[in-house]
Length: 101
Image 1 (spheres, one colour):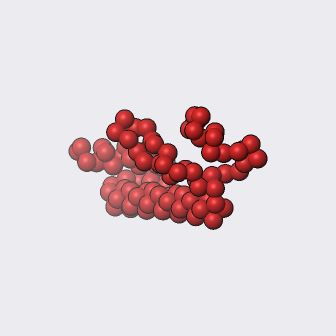
Image 2 (tube, rainbow, N blue to C red):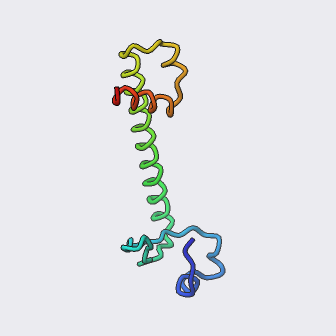
Image 3 (cartoon, rainbow, N blue to C red):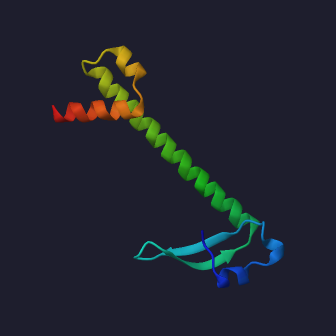
């Protein structure tokens, strides 16, 4: 949550329920400095599209990794029923065991 006197001065009471885009810079200590507050609806739409796109890409990568793990397990000497029933943590654990052995 970002809060402070300067932020509240930049957003009027009428805008209190409107969404805004904060442009911020990361700091060495893990905090962020807010450089600008953008109140444009098109900026908000673009930011939300960017978040959605990043989430879709992350989900696609995760699904590809799971499919690859299932493929590796299916080529190993693991019964197909085990591969079909394996959850993601179980797949990860089986891959780790195969790498150690």
